[in-house]
Image (cartoon, rainbow, N blue to C red):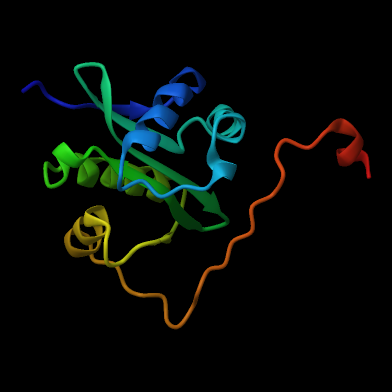
Length: 153
């Protein structure tokens, strides 16, 4: 088995990332994160989407963001054959390093399925996360992209 190559995603990687997410049973993402919005995100924030590849095939992704001095991990996926291989840990550590270099003092993660997702168990057990006291996150999908007429109003 060859080694993993990890790095920053570029806009041309987006179709491969989406295809990977769609075939990955452990990826949790909303339709708002697909194609156009992900391509824009990667273009505007070139270091905030990491991929791991083996033999030119994506086997793991981490998409994260920054707001002021906090980091947020939004989307994590790993090929089921690579759960426990360390590739996800490696990507998360790269994200942590990038966040720390940008003066982030804390990182939050959005966990969607605590019970049925094997990736959740790997993440929570291998990294010392603390449950954010009593907070819950709610989401609302927006129409994207907006037309130029809608942006003016």
